[in-house]
Amino acid sequence: MHAMLFGRFPSWTRGLLLCLGATLVSVVMATALFVDHRSGVYGSPLANQARLSAVSVFLLPPAWLLRRSRVGPWALATAGCAAGVVSLGCSVWMHVAAGQPGSSAARADAYTLFEISALVVLLIVTVLRGPAWPAAVAAVVLCAAVALRPVAVETSENSLLVALFSTFAVCAALAGALVARLVTAERRRHTERVRLEQRLAFARDLHDFVAHHVTGIVVQAQGAQAVAASRPQASASALEQIERTAAEALKALRHMVSGLRTEAATELVRPGDVEQMRSLVADFALPAGGRAHFVQEGRTGGLSASAAQILHRVVMESLTNIRKHAPTSRKVSVALRVHGGTAELDVVNDRPTPRRDTAGYGLIGLEERVKAEGGTFRAGLDDQGLWRVSARIPSTGTWRAHP
View (cartoon, rainbow, N blue to C red):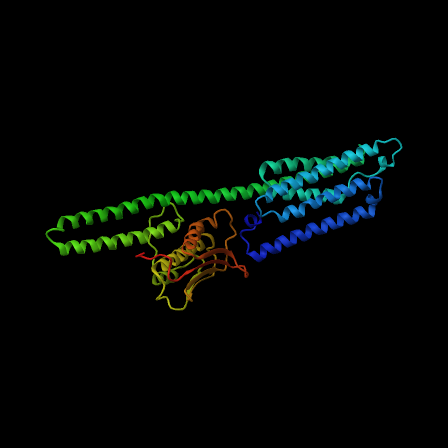
């Protein structure tokens, strides 16, 4: 979940934000526990009930440790629901104890700041990470536990004020968690929608491409049959041409299947080689005067055609995104390094776009294509706050024309 929420930040920034959030929650919980201790809550006639309900929140850590397992989300929802049930049970216990004749518990406080804070945190985590229906049930139980605890012993002006404050706090936490969950779900649906549109466009192009090449092969085969008896030499030449056409078709088909196009309405364009990549960078210019420069390390003579085409596609898409989303960039660099059987490409610009509505989705097809070639792909902010698109692929490619 946090990868979706903080996906625009580099990994160290996401880790820092998560650490800051955990530290803030820990400080709030420790402060609430200190205030409860100083107020004498754990020394009152209802101390046993208060301790039991406070301890119930520690069901969260083991459930959180299981979050990446198959039962992880269910464990979180179960832990939240169990903590809420324990808190409600303690509220009933407090109400019964306070109703005993001559009981001093009738004048004791029924609520603790630590428990309220812990249940609110547990509510947020459960709503964010739990499955829909179990999380909904746990949320209802937790909200009821927080709202009803202040009036468990007696209904007075003070207890009603605390109950109102607790209800407001839990509603605010629930609303925030629901918004975060819905935003993440919508972003995931948007990504899947883009993938589907790309695959539909790809299927249309694939149909036309296959029909064209297969038709050519059929025509050449018919011609070879027609001259096989009278002109054997011409028949052999035609068969060689059929072999070359089939190999070329299979190779190009492999590249089409290996990745999705990023624009559904564009024509089928065959990416170029390193020289065309260099020309593409040299001709690049931004309205604000920004230019791009190309840096090459290592010899590109051993770079396969498939690797060069994919790298050219990455450069073309990256420069298009910079022109579209970051036109105020002053410096754009394209670095190509070929060494040890690996081709590394980095496209960096100094003014990453602040927009979040369309950025990122055009690179989905590139990522799938690079990974299909046995490489790695990443697009995002680096440690210096620059927008960086990186691709690493084998320099020899993974496709062979003649298997």
